[in-house]
Amino acid sequence: MSKDKLKENILSKSFFRTPDNKTDREYAMTLDEKLGFDVETIESELSQQYRTYNEHTEGNEQKNHYEGTQAWIGLHPQILQTPYGEILDFLEHLEKYNINKIVDLGAGYGRVGIVQQSIFPNSEFIGYEIVKTRVDEGKRVFNLLELENCHLLEENILDESFELPEADVYFIYDFSDPMDLKFILNKLSDIIFKKDFFIVAKGSGVRSMISNKYPQFWSNHGVIHAKQWSLYSSFVDLN
Ligand SMILES: C[S@@+](CC[C@H](N)C(=O)[O-])C[C@H]1O[C@@H](n2cnc3c(N)ncnc32)[C@H](O)[C@@H]1O
Image (tube, rainbow, N blue to C red):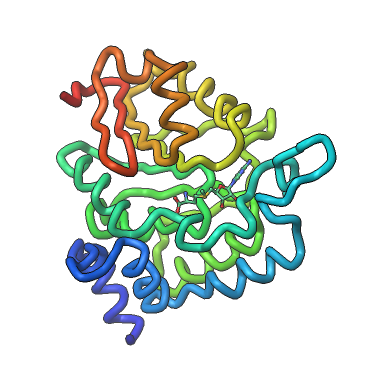
């Protein structure tokens, strides 16, 4: 597909919507190919270089020690990332709001930033990702698509020095272990009564943690639970 056609396609929601005869993950593979992502090669090289997420180590240490965080190396690439169709689904729930900036905390290859173009074409995307080769590949595709408003940054969001930027939407898909998720959720909790924002949470770790330990995220404005994600807001009534 020509670059111009691709650039035109990503502005259209229908490009990202999973057809009825495919699963979200199957269609995500098709879209990866169309967009020119080489995720399989990169993930397989990472698996050869680093311990995988499910390898046990002395002391039952579960982290895979990619800079002291859980980088999910060895996980199937289509499980590691949120399918495009699912991203479209939660962004459509936000369509009626004024969304200027979306931040993905543990962004993988930056898929959210690409789907974002079809709904909020003038908004900014910032994805933080610790694994350099994922960042490099995401940036390569962003450049190819000339997405000047999309940024993937190689950063450890667990660093004490990491400052959570202001954003309209924070997306979290179980980027690491419970203590690490807590570190970020505490930062969001600190601003819940001060700033207007949404949180989209995907994965059983972060969703159950919010449900059990962070009532401040859902007790005032409710929550929308979809099959794969939950949506919270610091300022808008959701139900
Ligand atoms: C489950 S994946 C989700 C990727 C993407 N958000 C998506 O939904 O398609 C979580 C990502 O977070 C990254 N990650 C884990 N710990 C991190 C950290 N401390 N700082 C930045 N990224 C991290 C992992 O390397 C992985 O790519």
